[in-house]
Length: 574
Image 1 (cartoon, one colour):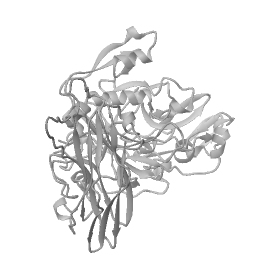
Image 2: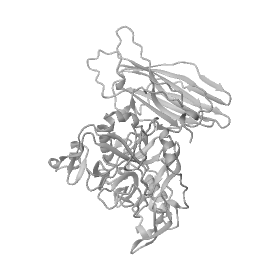
Image 3: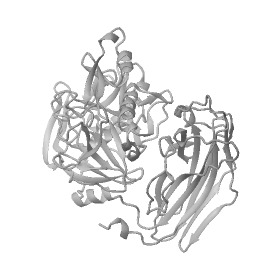
Image 4: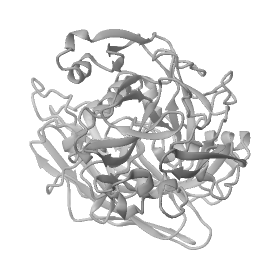
């Protein structure tokens, strides 16, 4: 495989000044640059176009991410577009970045960039897709040779174009809620210029991806592969009295690295009982404690008390990890954008899962404290209220990687809580022999369409996806997060199968460390249900108690510093 320094075939440097944005808690101003910037050479044209709206706020006080991410009043956001006209087999790698250009005059003072939040989205009609989590201003120490971005700028988004297209973006910038304006004297300012850089050449392939492809022969999918667990087990039929009947097909034993497109390109995912996808990344900076109550483990005393009303005094502190303990992970897949999707594997590459401390989990809790409404299947609900489990995952990340030097390597990656297709089970042609009366049985597309098709009246094939289906519900949906949970689709890709005992690298085996996914399943008997992983995929009510196994997305231009992915020599990310 070509190394990075050899794959640029045509070089076209594109530097387009998009906007100058000034912000303080007292004023938020945008200065329009006016001209349209067009770079043309040979078969490539890239153009930047401003829209008429500008950012121009008065009295912009510190605000929360929840508010800052959705501001849509005039003067609170700035739209722009990047378009290309490409002829022939040419690819452009481009990057949107921010550069601090604050200039002080007189007795003006500058607000620290650590209090300035930037948030970039992509516009798809009336919908916005988050391209990053809200991030405080932080300049990159190294340049990006593939896009032409120099060092000393904050990278907001990197992508590529290989055909004529036009993309619309929206920028928001605001003062973080952590800033306290009392006593600052007022008039503080902070300005950034938003730049776009681009180079023509082969699509950027991170060194980590190159190493993984060199270490693994890419496998081909077998026919109807996802109807089987990776050990060849499957449900051959369903008997109304005896339940599922099982079979085994040796030709469907599948292990190794496979590929499937996701929303950003080609994704490479591990499947089966693989043993060479281990990573060491991060460590606990100090002793880390959780709070135990009746065999369950919470990330804070507050959440423990919230979940155990009437028994608050029984919450006791338990050490989960010691200062200096390394964090180990499994690579679930290489994302289409080149980042690595990692699932937590504990403080050992070989956890025995005998208890929480010696497991791949960081807690054991209900998904939501209430289950009597379909909305409680969502990772968020009521248009942005965090589920109980999301708050726990966020707390763990904030108190560990989020407050360490490793945070800069963790991107706001894609996560999906697929609440699409919510309807009565009869609309999915579900077998009444399995469910009986379907009147009060409701399913999401994950359950009715993609991942449990053995339960239909007519034959169907499982069809996991790495793209998040659009939803019309006020709960669930697509997210950009620093940390989340695995999806049921990813578990099927890894070799798990609904109601079948599997053996993939994500299977917890016969232990009590069964863990939650973030994929809604249905609403049965008045209870919201979500997919979870035991010895195979299953569903359960959201107020049941299962383990929490965080997932993150990591990007690095440096490749792995050592290791071959085995448990004895895991890949290491600096």
